[in-house]
Length: 119
Image 1: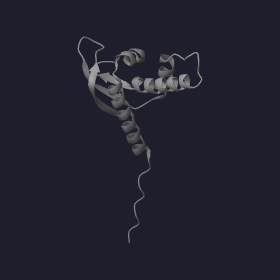
Image 2: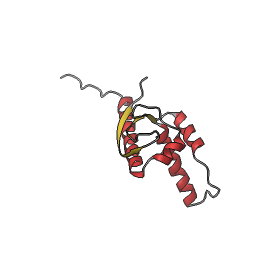
Image 3: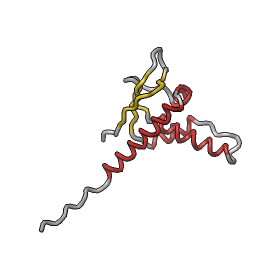
Image 4: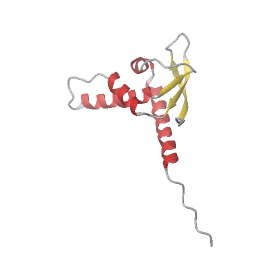
């Protein structure tokens, strides 16, 4: 099965190497992305109130960062490193692309419309 992907242009770019990368390819989520995200985000000592919300936001973003398949054609760095490098506005673009991929997935998995009976 081919995974659904979305090419995401970055406004600010990433500089994991010597040049600033401007394009990310995001692929559809897998269960492994959840595991990678949980391992990449440290659990705060105080899980009450704002700490719990910030933790969940970090997990959600880490899941999306784990979906990064390519950065300007190169393998991406680890999720923790990506989180350090990405600009908040570019993260917003990745979130939007992740939603587009989810919509494409739902469209592919929905049953075909039933043809109307001929009259």
